[in-house]
Length: 223
Image 1 (cartoon, rainbow, N blue to C red):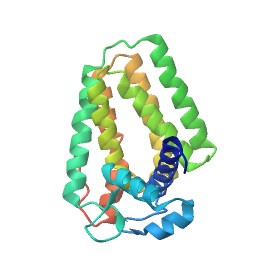
Image 2: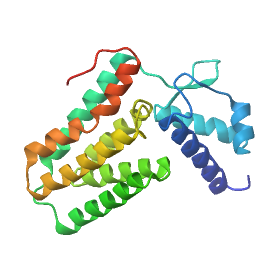
Image 3: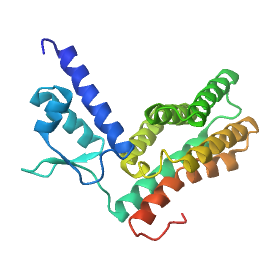
Image 4: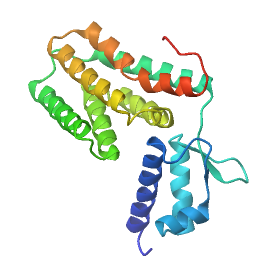
């Protein structure tokens, strides 16, 4: 590595690959992330791998117990409830303060992302692309609230929930529901139906959470 730019790119590459593996279940909760194995896999220096693991820890995707290898984070039922409580509060508030009607060009941009996401999901495209477009849709949606700090908080808790979202995020049933939900959100914005939009942005995130709860033997939440 001869430049800070090269090192940064390598760290980002490791982070993106491991994050994708966690989101789509290729790495499971509590699975050990051994530095030597990661160095061999990515042909990366040790300091690059350690920097990537630190970034993944900040994103709450990985935990690093003292004097032990890093592991893919798993959540307690209480942590899941708290994360989704925060997501519900933030996303509902973004819908509540969103200026309506939205600008025509902003609505057109949101529709265009929806079309690309639906096309990718329908043809069974690469799951990483589907996930990317799904998050792109949500970023564009919540950006319409015109509150930068609120959008940052929404993105933080969305990223924090990625290991939970990994349960079922690529399942056909969930993808079809996601497409329908996105279309309903666009319709609510077009009709300036704020109450429906507030409900949709909260209900939309529940299916993968409920699947996580079911697989962990937790009571299915109704909030």
